[in-house]
Amino acid sequence: MPRALLVVAAVVMTGSTVAYGAWSAVPVVLPLSGVLLVTAWLRVQGLAVGEWVLRMVRFRRARTRRETWYAGAAWQPAADPSDPTGLPRMDLPGVLAPLRFLEEEWGAGMPVAVVHHPYEQLYTLVLHIEFPGLALADAAAAARRVGTWGGLLAGWCEEGKPVSRVGLYQRYLPEDGAELVQWTAAHTSADAPYLAARTSAALLGGQQVWQSRHEAYLTISLSQQRARSAIKAAGGGDTGAAAVLIREVGAALDRMRSAGIEVRRWLAVRDLAEVIRTAFDPHSAAPHTAHRAAAADPTWAGLPAGVDLALAGPAAAEALLGSYHHDGGWSVTYQVYEWPRSPVAAGGLVPVLRSTATARRAVAMLYEPLPPSQAERAVLGDITRSSFSVSMRQRTGGIVRTTERQALADAQRQEAENALGHGLVRFAGYLTVTVTDPERLEEACAELEADAAGQGCRLVLRRLWMAQDAAFAATLPLGLGLPSAGLWG
View 1 (tube, rainbow, N blue to C red):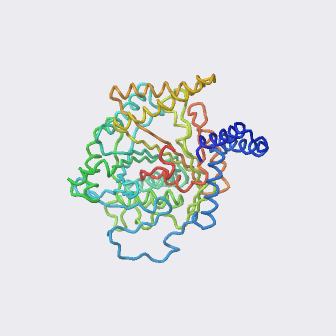
View 2: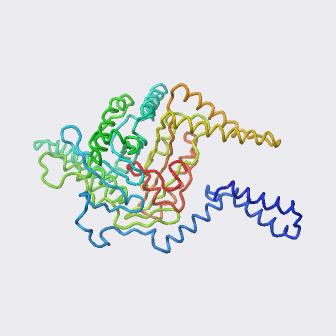
């Protein structure tokens, strides 16, 4: 329920009562107006009271209907084998259920996964990437890398570009050393000295968790509406859309390298299914890592690396009031409600980009490049709203807050930069913390909140109450935003 409507309703009720002299109604109107004002301005967990109550009613209704509970294929009747699209059956919960997974070819017949979201009319491609990071870089190198990343995004802000969303996803997982064990076994000579082999085996077997493993993924989403002509020229349908998307990503590889981004591989369907599966079931990460390391051996005769798409989702999941239970994991997802108001170092997010011995973390940054015409409308809208707010306070003799003046100055600066040809990008950030012991969940949340609020980071996080299942999906490398409220709501 919009705050402005509640305020207007309170003012109109009180003003009408006074104007018509209905003094007998004052004992009823004044308390009711007060309730409306309190509902408009008082906030609970970052939400207005009215919005909180509305969400709570919806959540309780969904819980009563068991809509917050998901049972995978293991608990459901077998699917109809006759699929008119010919695509593998997906077994994913909630907002992930409509997704369709296509497998196309890139380069010399290399399989590539393309995710189709029919409701948003997006086609998304996922890249497994590496980049040097900013934690150990000097100020000049960090500024250069940030600038080249901005240039990469600005390239998609040109008029007519079909890319409508870019996502950068990072996961930090406890490392169990499986890949190192496999590599050592493959590279140990049969005639190695006994003492050296025994020492290596003792060292490799003596630690269960070696370090925090970092995985990074880049998603690039093609808008079906923006690329309608190009898709038709490429043959139309899913095949044409995938061809246009692959061509667009291939053309951006040089700019990615200039930004310090190295593409390790284009994810195939089995690779992407493994990423989704290990997010839903943290306990499966170690065996899948060992399987992938073993499958890299040229003499391997077992199943290829990755996971079958039908096994990507959880066996069971339940959305709770402030958390999400999925297979062997319990997760809480936050939205970055407020970014630092004052300048911070380029590596300001480093404190939250880590895992602990008991908790995993996932960070998602979603970017929406705006073409110049849309950027101009967005900036003018911000200027109009900020100018109206400032002028109304000045006319009524009120004090113009510094935040309102700053918002107007920022909007005017964006207008000037847009006029000079700079790109405008909307963005949002989400963080997920996952544990395998529910008793440690709130402790892990407190650690994440403390890291985010630290001196080097200064982020204000908002726990996404009553939307944890959809929020968790937003941190999977699939190019999704949050539903209904929109990407920036």
